Image (cartoon, rainbow, N blue to C red):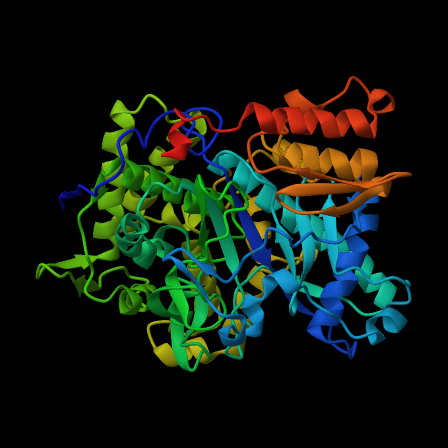
Length: 554
């Protein structure tokens, strides 16, 4: 496949474009957990509120803290579209009104027996944990590379599991969380990624570069699913949890008429300089190796797009292709391109990988964390192409598929017969794969047993449960919670608001890589007064304001 020479502004790949240091990119994740408590009589929203409320105690047990400060929605504009318009509120689905919060029935307080109900919590590690409609959602703090993004994502899973255990004791019924994307009844909930991109990059260039990649990415990092179709109405196993739920190429929605490329234009940073690419096509990864590759490969593709070096491939129907590829775990199926060729998902993924490998050879700015992704991506592609069993420990859907096939063989089921996938035992294994109760989840059991490749250090995940990334504004947010939590009046990705025996003070934080450990820390908490803290954040933000020659401002 040839290389797309997209028009990009001169200087677009200049140092520090989407991060403070060359090669960095601000990124993070959002995970909605499936939630249920059999016999409790509580709604999913009430259960979610119980889990969010319990997070404070979970963090206290870890020596950290959370703040019950309301979320500041001032900068939230979920109806702005990257194509240059805004959707009318009257035309929006209620799930799109994320800037208006979520309410919960008062009955949850009585049944929870713990008094105040929290719908939002800001965590000491810089993350947000809140009720997103009918799910508890963990939004990770801003990080600068795919390794850190995966580490803080996995840390969120452990925190959510700990909060669910505490909440279970409070309501008198066991609350089950699942890190998956489907409820088996036709509904899907999201695992989203966010990547800072330059506003100077034409949005059409993003779309053309991302559509083939997103139509095939799940073959290297999907989490697998028993059942085909949104309701699982057809028997079988497929590569992706989310593939059956996408209905258009490009669009603003996230919960209906889902697009492969989401157009929400809500940068959580300086609007004139940045976009936030809001990615909704991904599966919830329990395995760290798949989470790392999911974000690392995407970061490389964004670098290729920004440099005008994407492979030239255009699928006739990428929306159909994402389903076709997902329904073929053998990875043999091919789809037509507009130039009359037929290509497989592996062909497309390898074309992106080869372009990234070639670019990396001449790109001195790529960080070590991102260079580590390329050999992992190569190992995955080669193992899948050879149908090598090493793929069973490198790719989450393959690991699940191998476990299901082994169980079926012991039970005398012929998995080559589609009807065999109707067996309740296989559906239960699929569900238990993502069970977040301690010692119950099969995905994590395989990791502990060494049956999955380990690419994230255990010590890093443990640290990330209570400590924010040191090199982004998440550090300032985390410090605000742990040091000044009682004075924190409100918070958001872009601001902190304090009230301390006087007027309310709002601190804007529009630069994601300012407000770092180096810039806002004190020798000890006793020496760190609120006024000094706020002044240090302001000074840091001002120091990173774009100048006329700054490539961010192109």
